[in-house]
Image (tube, rainbow, N blue to C red; front, side, top):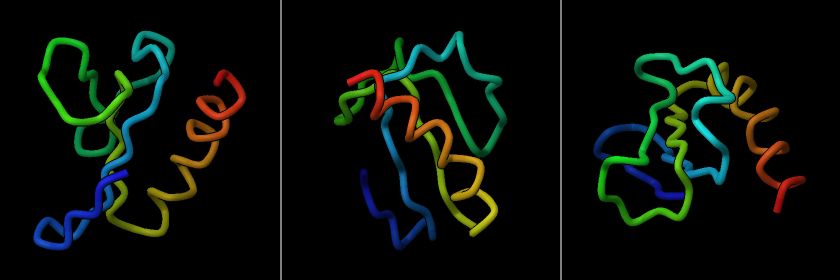
Length: 66
């Protein structure tokens, strides 16, 4: 999890296969072919409370798979 106050967002890198998630522009993206500091292949951007609600099930899936 990375806090980006300048971008007004929290970035969460999850160990989930991006192919198993419906990617949404501005909310989630595939990080497999992009160098990054995180540990997961799925990047989730939380900017609003509604984003946190959408991210919750994804975070649980990654937690349960660990």
